[in-house]
Length: 97
Length: 492
Ligand SMILES: [Zn+2]
Image (cartoon, rainbow over all chains, first blue to last red):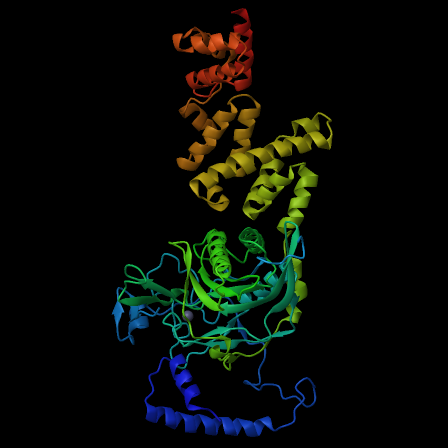
């Protein structure tokens, strides 16, 4: 379960202003997700044991690395193309203290 | 009241972030050579956080991280993984920073500084955020401008236990760290902002504060001194010190509360699902073999091999390029004493003499100009330096003349022998020195000093030596001047 206050805090962390109606909606939705994970928590797993622990699956791969070779970047114009506001080659954003 | 009294005791722990000298970024192939570039020209979908772009780890960054860990005496872990640290700030395009949490590269290291040991808690990798630019100051700007060229540059973060007890110790530790990272060739200390520090500071009786944004090596001592004084004043007035995050304002030399409402759990760290675990234990043996002689070992060797003083050994080995330059100069110096069948001690004393010229004279000139040995070696080769020392040994120039040659080479370039000619730096012969001595003694303005000397005021001699040096523009040997003056004054 998750409370309304916690939803409000999560909204603040995401820098989202939530209305009371939205807070109630997200409270219900997030609670149902957490309930679902609570079911998984019931599994009795010894995480330190080789035989019963479940290794995170990721993509079933390990040790994927790339060589340290620089490749061409985007041009400045391409990089800024989706930005709503730009100035002198920079992205423009609200000032946050 | 002695060692039991812990009141007022200071505890400092550091989180040091150093940019690693890879050619490409940590999770994408953008070039790391972004200094002095136009903004947003070293970026791609990955380091701009565009949807669908996937990170892939740079193998060299992992190797550099392991190397740093080994050099700091850490236990390299068998497997390392990456995490997402979630927070919103314009310098972080994805809304999270890819860093490490559980399963860092290494744990439990130890670094010796002066007479103490500083425990290293962990060493891990993370990506540098972008850079924010403000028009005017951060307080008055109406908006911020963002350059993501720095976004994704690999950082190695080195976290110490709170073992440091004073701002000075913190500075010494950082100096040591900078030196070791430079030796490993994984870090460029000449780069602006390549080493940044956050510090956890507490004074016994109060909570700890985290001071962020100490962006210069030199700023550490000042930032910590301010913070400790602030905390002590609060405690003295009976006001508590609250646990908080503070921002170091370098221009004003003060720390300011960030009034942040975010705590560790608010970062909601979780494993980065787009990156897979990396097994690193297999890298250890090979990388250990690549670690060069580190400053402490080199220092010991310089003392025993070259008979240099402890102080000179410290100064020569702090920066590997200075140590290498010194050894190259020593190896190129003519071995006349050794050839003449003299002992190793004589050869050693010659190397100790060279140490004075590198550690005191040359480094002094570099510090004065604010340039590094690496830059200076483009202007003065070890061979040139040997030539200057030979000119001095052969009496072609005086010590002051030799220093003049070095200055000219640093400021305007040129070769030592040409400079001697061009600037007329050749030492004067005995006849010319004698002439200058006679002139000085005969001058009306010096009559007082001569009389003083005759009355037993020995300091008057120094004044007269100075006058001769001035007249000869430093081209006469001070020892010779001294002898001649004494001789002539006795006759008076
Ligand atoms: Zn990129």
